[in-house]
Length: 159
Image (cartoon, rainbow, N blue to C red):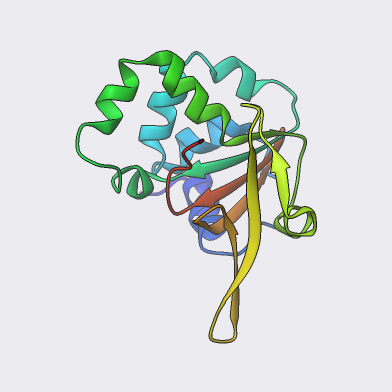
């Protein structure tokens, strides 16, 4: 049986953006969603849990488990054994401050905590517009107590 939290996450994961801010932080929301296990494992290994539980605010581009599954075989294991590289990749998914998809689009690019910038653009498929961060599509967004999570379709790799 699904908990109320799971039902909220199901609703939020299937809408463009959540209208209500969840009372949980970035990490607890990812854990509770159930489809960010790889991300949570990586964040834990890189010792970033406390940072992402702090008041922030943060904007996090969160690859789902299916996004991580697109990486070549052995990549995740290799990263978990190379914490400096894992940390570089994870911090490339985080922006200091809270930015909605519209705010990101208006900027065009924005600097990540890692130091490099990501490009944000709008692409149309027919008459439907989608927001992309680099080449990864934003599939939904969730407001949480310490920022916003943008669920993305693939893992972002810094240059």
